Amino acid sequence: MRRLLTVSFCLVMLFHLAKSQQLSAEEILNNSIAFHDPKGEWPSLKTELTFKETRPNGPDRKTIAMIDNSKSFFKLNRNDEEVYKVEVEDCVVEKGEGTSERGLMLRNYYTYLWGLPMKLKDPGTNLDETYTEEEVDGVACYVLRVPYEKDIWYFYMRKDNFAMIAYKFYKDEAAGKGEYIPTEGLFTVGSMKIPNNRTWYELPGNRVLGTDILTVAQ
Image 1 (tube, rainbow, N blue to C red):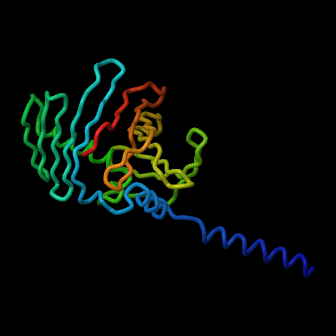
Image 2: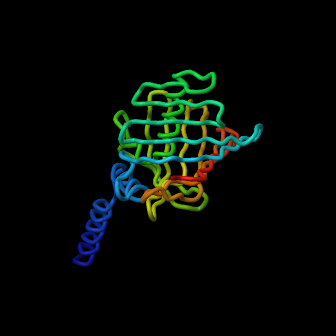
Image 3: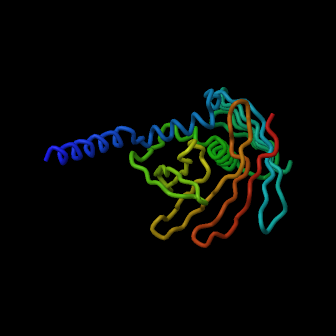
């Protein structure tokens, strides 16, 4: 009887220890940000990023994004055919037939995707309190879920070092319609570690939509 009580006590203690060591979704995100931006440089980042963007049914595209987060400044030059300058929420079309709305959309696109996972701290980002665990190409990951107004995003962080190695979003989760984006390699910008390559796959079906490659940061 005494032995049975001892075993039961040990099991209870192990249960509480495991529970106390379990991370929250917020802690997982914080650890991922610490991996990618250990010195907290993103809010004041000033840099120029050059991308090679490949598409299956079209020519490669060269895009240069100039970012100064300390001044809410963003300038985009795509193939020297369309150029947009954004200061806070005011966008000027400097070249091409695009609109200011398109310029703002492109600003949001580049700063969000290349500012992950730090951008998950932005106001209006409602991180789910619960998370799941999955394997991505044999790598054990925590999976964080963030529902936005028009789509639902999932972010995959390695369990061993919290690096973000993939994400996906659904426009219609019930129908499985969305995109899956694994990352490859890391590019150093200051002390930040930004994913080097991102390949886009259509869901369902896994049709390749394109690859974005960060080639230069200065």
